[in-house]
Amino acid sequence: MSQGRIRALLIGDAQADRVVPPSGFTAHLTLFVAGAMAFLAVFALALSLASGRLADRWAQELAKAATLRINAPADQRVAQTDAALKILQQTPGIASARALSEEEQIALLSPWLGPDIPLDTLPVPQLIEVIEGEPGYDAAGLRLRLSAEVPGAVLDDHTRWREPLVGAANSLRRLGLFSILLIGGAMAAMITLAANAALAANAQVIEVLRLVGAQDAYIAQAFVRRFTLRALIGCGVGVILGMLGVWLMPEASDEGGFLTGLGFQGWGWVWPILIPPLGALVAFAATGTAARRKLRELA
Image 1 (cartoon, one colour):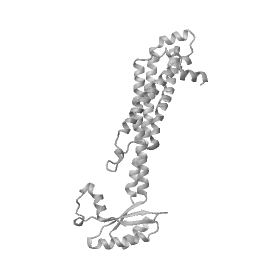
Image 2 (cartoon, rainbow, N blue to C red; image 1 turned 90 degrees about the horizontal axis):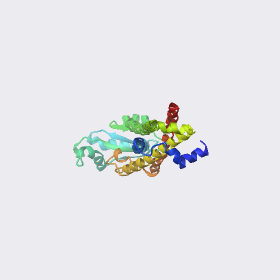
Image 3 (cartoon, rainbow, N blue to C red; image 1 turned 60 degrees about the horizontal axis):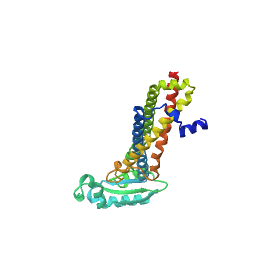
Image 4 (cartoon, one colour; image 1 turned 30 degrees about the vertical axis):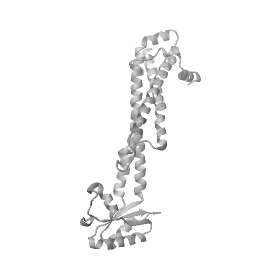
């Protein structure tokens, strides 16, 4: 694109702008579609970023942690717990190991069984928290030793349920990014329809412009500029409303879980600002393609 066409696209041409109706169905449709798609893109982006943070947090926090359960009769539980702790302290690659207190176990079970849990009357196993060090420990070898010396010990390194959780969070992140692509495609399709409708409605004006010597590139430029600016304005309004909606959502909390952590954090608030120029770029490409095709049909 030449510098003259770029200047005309940014500054505009009063005579060329008369080709495109400044208001009406196509103008309202373009503004509404751009705003609605930008609004949805903000939430899709928030979902994708939040899912990525969740996957990274689960991967980091659970990768180094394991739990050892002592399933033993009450009269043997203390002895087996001490024996398991001794084995863990002797195992290379384990940074620390400690038995959870009764208060900590009550806190873990209270969301399901209530705060007043009589642990002394329930067959609740003793839990031992295991923190992995560098370069890691041999889980298979540790299980064999525990099975021989502490029959009631069961080692859970969280692999069985950590990987599905992290995989699900990563799938949500990919789904959010794919949704943004679908939103961009739907926006391009709707703007193409609006541009075609505007071109068809102004077929007589286009014919007169050709008779007086206007080139198709000059006419197409008028449509591209008008629809690109409409998309930019609509996307800007949609992004502002979307960011306001995300900002009003509850902050992340352990009680609320994943649903309260859908907001942007830190530099994440910068990403939605890129949506309006990207929306304008989509409108520029879609309108340019539609205008050239329609003008060839009207020739």
